Image 1 (cartoon, rainbow, N blue to C red):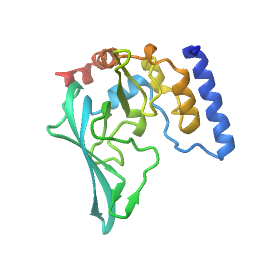
Image 2 (cartoon, one colour):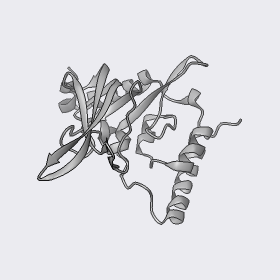
Image 3 (cartoon, one colour):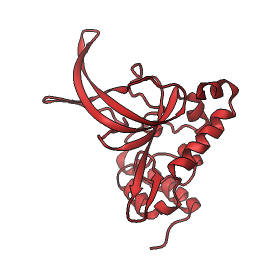
Amino acid sequence: MKTASPTAWRRWLCGAMICGALAAGALATTVMPPGFSEMVNGSDYIVRAKVKSVSSELRNRNGREKIYTKVELQVLEVVAGQPPSPLILTMLGGKSGDQELIVEGAPKFIPGNEDILFVSGNGKAVTPLYAMMHGQYPVLHDTAKGRTYVCRSNLVPLLSAAEVALPMADGEPAERLRRLVNPAQALTPEEFILAIKGVRNANPTRAKSLH
């Protein structure tokens, strides 16, 4: 099957999301995608990590019960900043008993999965990642081809760091993109992390937090 060029699939993505918005009346999630430099320098810390466990519980906040989810991570590499140890992310939403609270656009975590995460406001924000789903980059392993590569949170392979700033496709548009974009052209975790460190090191204030 012929693989779409990066420029071609960017045009297709913008067109598909406009059509989806017209058909549905609005996009499912309204979160402005950040620029790559903005996200790198705006994150408290950035890690490559594997999900150890996910658990939800009811908490009483200001006299009201709300469901929160805790995600315990095994840090494989500290890319920038100084994450706490152990690293446990806390976010609004989840399922507790017969109650469920869904936060539209919140990142999803599954035990055993590996991600590069841009963490911001952990324990204070609704979700602990910069720009919600835009701050999560799953690391996938293609065992058949012996290659590891990075995706956006919708599992569309990430071809360049600049694509961080693209709108996030969902549903059928995302499925079509996953078929169109060749994983062999996607960034490896090492390439993505190198790009992150390059931006962080270029910021004198933020660069200090790498050490």
